[in-house]
Amino acid sequence: MKAAEERGGGSVPCLLVQAGDDLCAVPIAVVRRVVRALPTHPLPGAGPELVGLAEFGGEPLAILDLARLLNAPSGAKAVYPVTIVVAAGSAEARELIGLAADAAVEIVAVPTSGIVTGGAGLVRGETTIGGRLVRIIDLEALRASP
Amino acid sequence: MSEATVLLLRRGLTLWGVPREQVVGLDASAAGVRVGLRSTSLLADEVVGLVRDLEIRPVGAMMRRYWQEHCRGVAVHGGLPLVVVDSDHPPRALLE
Image 1: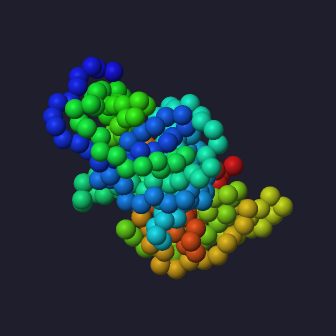
Image 2 (image 1 turned 30 degrees about the vertical axis):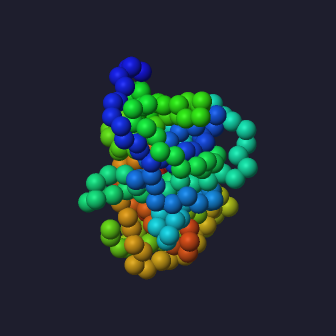
Image 3 (image 1 turned 90 degrees about the vertical axis):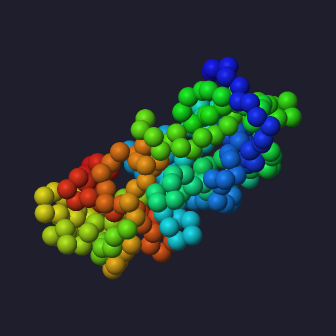
């Protein structure tokens, strides 16, 4: 990871999410809903990151395994697993996706001055909150070509 | 978004829709139901029903990134999500 630190006095409101042993921050701006883990139907031939298809609000919703996306070590079995429904893309090409996670923890304001940018793929950067390492999620990375 | 009348099939835990106009025959056997298309045939565990004017949504970039099978899109019927098959490129799961 590059040691380029974002400067500035602002903060980004984020939903802290437990995914395996990792804690990550999903910007509130992209979160549409947090619901109890949606039942999924597998898609044969899908990569391990894609849990399957679910129904949400009468629409099909692809569900991705957030811990797998982050390569996070498996944690203890979640007591109340959740699906975080998020939106990415421009207004003209908005795409909803579900992130299967172990828990939605709390909403926090992540100071931008504390974010160390860099990393690859889904992780835009890292910071520490309450002494714990938190990975900042960038959903737009999932829309780009692999 | 598009609409189509589809034959609903179940294979394992997954629901599939096949555009009705592509279906040329059905043949039940011990292995399941063989659905004849113009150019090939599919194998399903059962035919669930026929759905008229099903609203089909294109597969988004994030889903496509982790599932590269061709399809016409995805939909929901009766509270259950399904994949609508592209009959020119049927998913391998229905050919086996």
